[in-house]
Length: 145
Image: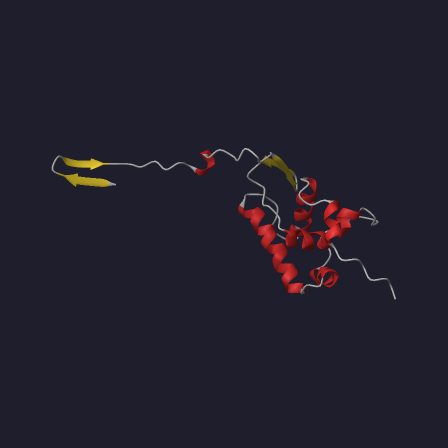
């Protein structure tokens, strides 16, 4: 910014603090995220999950959390997840997309493309953000009939 006055012209530069220079909150613990072939450790990569986030994620990633399936686990479809928790499939898909986008905005790599949901599941479970404890949020399954 240049100021012109009676004593001449002066240039003043303001230095705003870089957000990366800001100290991390004391209560934040370092978290390691493993996505694809890259591991990232930082307190910045933590996007808190709401109760409804945990519900939809527990239903979508139930196969990852139960360890009872044969073969490699896979995320449940938005339709199957919606039926499981009583939501609409579009709402499930958008909620998962919004959660994934929160982590992408924080700089977590590997959450785009065809394997984005698998990577999100691995990220949340490997960091302890989503645990088998979250399965308790799910409604009981109806007996086969």
